[in-house]
Image (cartoon, rainbow, N blue to C red):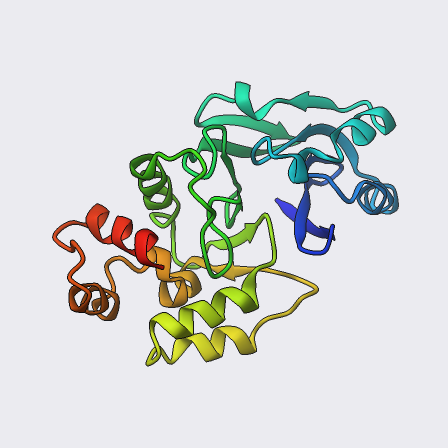
Length: 232
């Protein structure tokens, strides 16, 4: 399975996922760029969908659908663990409630498109108010192999790493992560995220010690996650 990333509206990231000549546009705000790439590479865009229904992710839907014969897949109608066939390959979709109730992650063999659930370096705001659901969504994401690539919905890398440095001043992996930053391609692995992203480091010894010093609840994974979200 192939993936091409497109930046739009300063820090938004959209995607064209394709297998040979069949593709799906996800958060397709960069309409013209996606169409041009598809034309140059003889890709038939058969589906248009979103990681969730916030307008900054859906803004390209109408034009993309007008300029293609694609079928719109409404994220609010997607069943968890539903799949889409792209030629001989399949793309899996599963619910990741938390940032919003309708948040979806797309999974191929070696990458995830995580929208605003998990960013490269941070996580999304819990606009749903359901921290338990958000925790379970993140737990599912981080259960995949460490070399799984993470493609998110925004480029917040540098500001997120400044926050990470303020939380874990002695974490040597943060500088390495920052040095690998490439604004032309925002991607990391799950191992990278687990080494620097404060909001999923609820099992890291240094983070647990930080929380303990602040007298925050730390007895369970969920307590530690909730504590991190509350104070940072």
